[in-house]
Amino acid sequence: MKNFWYACEFSFAVTHQPKQIVMLNQRFVLYRNTQGQIVALKDQCPHRGAALSLGWVKDDCIHCPYHGWKFQADGQCIEIPSNAAGTSIPKKANVESYPVQEKYGFVWIFYGDLPAEQRPALPIFPEYMVSTMRPVYDQGIDNANYARLMEANLDFTHVIAVHRKSFGQRVPINKTIKYNVEKYDWGAVAKVKYESLGKSKSVLNFLLGGRPELKTRLSLYLPNVTLAEISIGRDESFDIKFGILVAHLPIDDNTTVVKRVLYRNIFPLPWLDGFFRKLDHKLAQEDTVVVATLNSQPMPKISAELHVAADALDITFRQLLQKHLAQSSPLQPNFVNEPSKTL
Image (cartoon, rainbow, N blue to C red):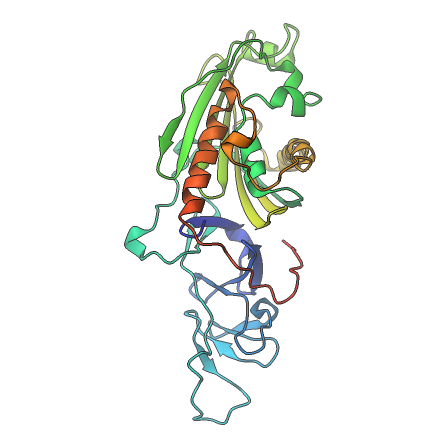
C-alpha cells in the first residue's frame, strides 16, 4: 500500500548521522539537518547504486560513500567531485525524496504519489495515554509477515492459548465473544469487557478490592500500526492501564521489523523500565512464535480460512487490506544486494 504514512522509526533514533531503514522491499536513508528536521531519501545513489546511508552528512547534504557525490535534501545532486568546476550535473543525477513527519515519538514517511492535500492524516492516539503514561521502547526483527503479526494484535481471544503460560489462563472466555466494530477510512476499533480476571486469591484482587474487570480496546491504523488499550479494575480512577502501540515495518513477505511502545500507569519509575521492557518483549515473542508457523504468510483472502464471531475485527482488517492493496500497483525492490535487515 503506497499512499499512506508509514511509522518507520523512533524519533530519538534519527540523528545527524545517516540511518538506513529497510521497508517495503525498499531502502531509505534518514538524517537530521542542522535545524533538526528529518530528511528522507531513497538509499541508492543513481551513479553506481551505493547505499547513501554509508556516506556522511555535511552542510545538510548527504555524500555518497563511493565517489562522494553530494545530494541536497530534495535529492538533487549538486556536486560531483570528479568533475571540474563548472561542469553541468546530469539531469538524472538525483535521488527520490519523501515527505516526513514526526508525531508521538515516531518518524512517519509518506511512500506514495498523492499531493499533500490528498494524503491521509496521521492517526490520533488517545491523549490520556501519550500525555500521562510512562512509555518504554523496544524493537526487533520477526520472521513473520507484518499483516499476520498485526492480525494477532487485533485478536481478542488468542490470549487464552498463545499467552496461556504468562497470563492467558486467567482471562475468562467461556461464552461466545461478540462485539461491534467501528470502521473508518483508514482503520477500525473494537472493545470487549470481560466479567472478571483471576482467582479469588489473586494479588490483583487484593490491590483492586475484589475480582477486577478486564477491558480491552483494540485499534487498527492503516497501514502498519496497532494499539491495544488494556484496563484492569472496576474503578476508572484506580484501574491499572497499559497501552501497547506497535509499528510493523514490512521488509518482505516473511520478515518484519517491529517497533513497540509499552505505556503504563503502574509503577512509572524509570528504574523499572527494564522490567516492563522484558515483559513486553516476552509477550510479543509468544505471538511471533505462533504467527511464524502459519501456513500462508502473505494474508490470504477472507474466504480461504474459517472465521467465528470473535474474528470480526480481524475480518475488517482483511477487508481494508484487500481494498487498498487492489488500488496499489505492485512494489518492485530497489535492493542492489540483499539487505542486511539491521535495525
